[in-house]
Length: 121
Length: 136
Image (cartoon, rainbow over all chains, first blue to last red; front, side, top):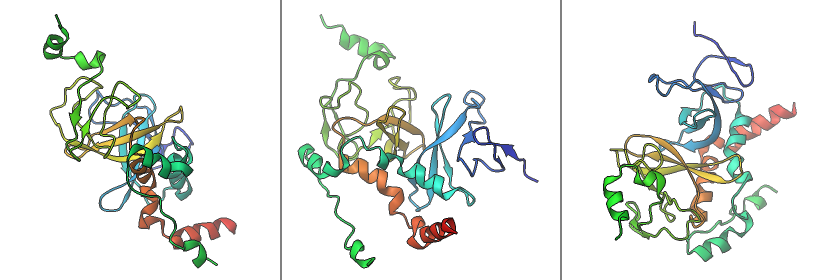
């Protein structure tokens, strides 16, 4: 029988390394110097070289970052919300990206959806 | 007499209190990077390929023995709404967060933010299934 932990953020009982509902975790470490016990909240998602998603959690108390593999029962909507946060708060006007890139001498283009809109009709 | 050079040599924590003003050559893309244009005194990564080097344990202490290349793996939004890059050391796996600079390649930044969505985990069928379940 696995030990159940009550999530300090949303109250869900879970076993495993992070809460499947709010994706928060507790900051624990084998090294007592880094074991701060703070709440780690999800800040981003990254794609591992093998193609799997991993959550990036950041400790509210000490700012340390850690990655957790996405588990099977994780809330898909919360995952999508975390992953799209940067897109929703761009640091530059996203519609003028190509102009900005040209000004800074960067290459690349944003392209389009390759006719995906027409296919849907 | 310029004592600044001597301090740099003997004071271990010089860069904890002073910005580094030396240009450097990116170990990944080979471009020369100058401190001007970052919009900050502390340039941390190459503005072209966004790679960094694992030199510090704490900001400015130059205490790391790893010296691995730090790969940009993602971006996140800080409380004040500005983006920060998440770097991961390709040698030891240490994660680090860093403010984006004013002259960082915007295309590369946005590509990092888009990466999770270009992954087959988000297949249209799976998303459709979720949406149908929500409408029930």
